[in-house]
Image 1 (cartoon, helix red, strand yellow):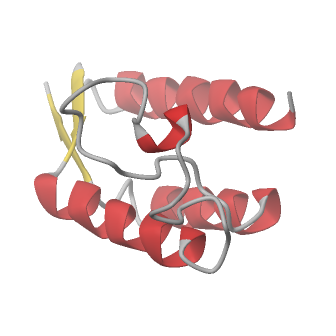
Image 2 (cartoon, rainbow, N blue to C red):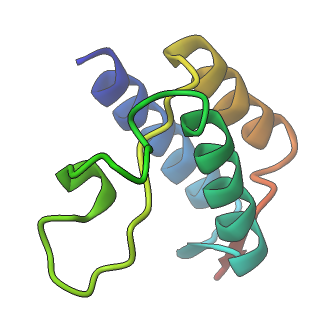
Length: 99
C-alpha cells in the first residue's frame, strides 16, 4: 500500500512537470532500463528471492520461455523513494520526454 501511494504521487508529479513543460510523451531510455535491471538484480542477489533454485512468479517461472528475472526492488522502501527523488532532482534522468 505504501509503495502504491508513492507510485501514484510520483506519476502525478511527473505528469504535472510534463504539462508545465508542454511535454506529452515519456519513456525510459534503454540505458536506464538496463541500469535499473542491474540494480534490482544486484540487490536481490543478496536475498533468497532471486535464487536460481527459487520457482516463483516473481522470477517469471509461471510463464514458459519467459526470461527469469527478479523485477521488484528488494532494497527497501526508503532506498527506493530516495532513488525516485534523485531522478526528479536530476530532471527525470533516464527518461526521454518529448512534446
